[in-house]
Amino acid sequence: MRKTAVKRVVFCFSLLAGSASADSQFLSLAPSYLPNYFGLGIGSYPDYIGSDDSAVGVAPFGRYSFGTQRYIALEVNYASMNLVEDPNWRFGPAGILRLARDDVEDVAVDLLPKIDASVELGFFGAYEQVGTDPRDRWWVGGNFTHDVSGTSDGYTVAASVRRWMPIGRFAALGLAVGTTYGSSDFMDTYYSIGPEGAANSGLDVFSAGSGVRDVRVSAIFMQPVSRKWVLGGGLLYSRLLNDAADSPIVSDRGDRNQLVFGIGFASGF
Image 1 (cartoon, helix red, strand yellow):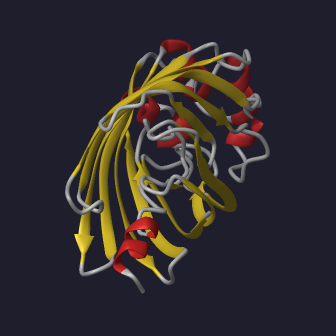
Image 2 (cartoon, one colour):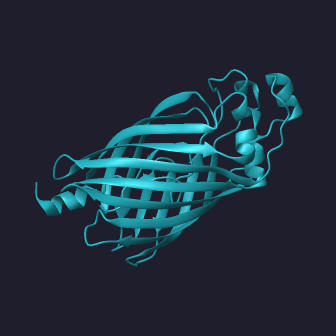
Image 3 (tube, one colour):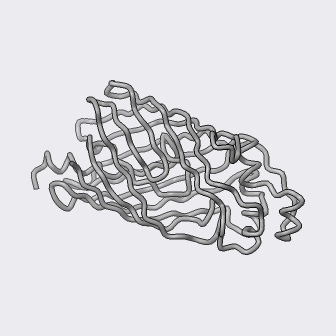
């Protein structure tokens, strides 16, 4: 395998832990070097954020470049568009498709009012520093997204720091830490329990306010297998905090500790 070809494919995966990464319960396998690619990932993730039940899903990710630095990227349920032609700075619109909380495994939580899927739109910004080896890089970024579908009418602010390091001749290791802040409307929608919900589910009435929802750490290992293909695997651990952790949905029926893991593959084009 030619060394230049390896450098073109080794970055088909990078683990996003909080936004300029996707703010969700998913392990996001996202590209950071190939100008154009498509991939699929499969993994285990919580039934809802705070659940102690797991689900298994398959999701796509990809990127299409339309300039030296400009691109459109899809990372599972998170999409972004970088509009800045700069070697380090990234900025542009972003959006999240947040899944519904409906027909969950937990019998008590399933008796609470259903929460519809939502679309959140906003923007992201980041600074990325790349070394002489493209596997040697830092990323510091964040995003702001606001619900435009009427599900919560709230917003989230997420931030992350990511580090990629060369492993041997061709492989790479990515590490990340991130956090998410939720507005009062957002937290109320996903973590509060009203009198009717308490009566139906047997859980205590609870009112969730704004605050930091969680902190997350993640790791991923990437290994090229040919000139075009790369395989990756990783895990993400998050700890729910404040009212998200104290809600009976989590403290009584779920788990403050959340684990996501998966594998995936991608090909450049």
